[in-house]
Length: 188
Figure 1 (cartoon, rainbow, N blue to C red):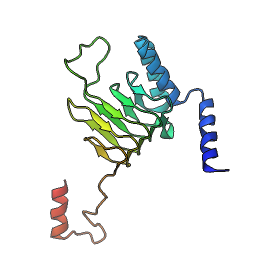
Figure 2: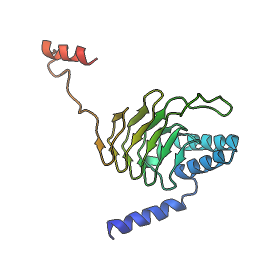
Figure 3: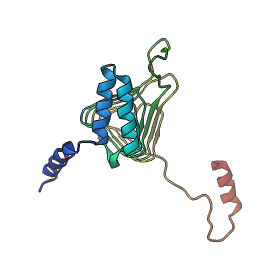
Figure 4: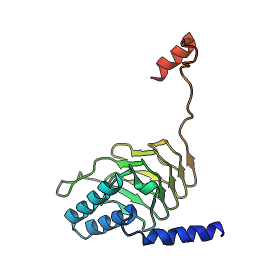
């Protein structure tokens, strides 16, 4: 069976799953848009209980969003705008400024947002946080690597990766050289 055919079959089988985290999130968003914020919050809490996530009902999300590993640990605030065919892996955080509760007054001017355009892939443990009072945009087709911390706009088609791990202290000899200790002090 070809890769394209397997992908099609996978999508069809996922649609059969009645209580997926994606469907619960989309239901919560739909209820929130219709003004049923208490019911939307209840559906959000069911999603949180079942899948250990926090997916804001005020977010705008494409209907074909995919959440990896049943969305465990994903946190998305209500001021996120997520495009189509976006894949978000587990333990990802998307946050832009303060999230307002119903009835709280809004500050004047545009509210900060995280805007994730179409076809973006966000790897495990990535953190995307907009600077205070500013919006942040992840361009179409961008890829955010596992463990990356994003605080600035990412251009379309770009790949963002975290710095590689490095050894700062070796335990094998029991002692570290003065150069290794100096590097360890500077990195802390």
